[in-house]
Length: 549
Image (cartoon, rainbow, N blue to C red; front, side, top):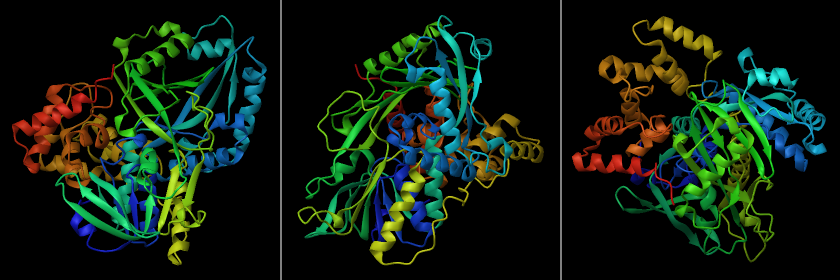
């Protein structure tokens, strides 16, 4: 991946995609693999916002049964299997423990929950259609009180009637999973530029001709022309349409997560509450807790996690698992983002958006009513991580019809991502350990999980400079070679890109000034950073760890 905005703007593309989150990444990949000329721009770094701020779940949407969104559930379950198949190093099964209680309402009782999960299992009839037995998801099973407490001894036992165990999937790194989609797109010819702001649409009357793009690294403005513009700007999608005669509106939902010490032993816990579900998810030896789901009315650029958001999650944990005794000091890290939801047209301003549909909408602006019609523009709004690949397929199918191009069928459901051609991840890691006896097995497993079959690129860097195999921070697995690789091959241009989105160095909390300064030195040499710039980059990272009052 090489960033070259002037070169990108030197020709007219079939598609210009605005937005470098997972939706834009999947559209770019699908379109490029089918032979379209593609350019994608992102105003910050790739996956810097909503796509990074998820619960790290690839899930079927069990709770959508409540609103009988059977089609969305089946789509999600099918797509869950696709991610397992194409990215086995980054997506893997996760056991979910759902405690049940006596005296609850009929809809929350164990018989009703088992009935719902039986339907869920039926809709997931293809959950075992995978060559790797480690990826095959079992159906749900019921636990009595003794079995439940053996698995999670600190659950409040007063009205506990047992639990149900079911399975969904977890992402090791959403940022790296989306990045692999972009790497695949770039390998197929797509031109990608981060830190490039779409200042507005280029128009000739009711015809959209492209976007006016400002390079935020040089402050130069360019015209980026295309036969079709794809609006995949997530929470900013309606802002890109500002000034156009359109009725599109995005509802923004605030989702906040916290990371604490480990509270489970490898399984997740799902608690059903009055205003949604609370997840305690095992992740990288810690527990990821989330999420909030509240309407956000402010400007998306102004969003920040507040101390009140953190306190709300801590209170929820105390309500459901008081023995955890979590305090603010136990919060090692926090993050949040805005979910873009499709507006249902109502004026309901309820603070919770938990019950809002997660359906996606592909809007061809040329097919709006006469007062709102705009040719050459498609907006992809809403959706969720799990179904982003399928949403992209629908967008590219529509684009092909608009361009009057006969394209090959979509192949992203079966084509492995760049690091994903792995038959069995456990055997792959064991093979790497055997082939490289001179390297730390833990480091090899870490590289395999992050890069899959591409881990050899990192080993070549280490072979050239063995010092780059050293961890950047004590107790963390990230190494210097990852910083060098991110700079050379993954379009990292700022320290936060590396710390949060190319590696996991900063995703469990502040790794310490020595680690950040070391990463800044590795980046700063090739990028020409002096000491003042390195310090400024470190301060950019440290600013992320501060919550708003």
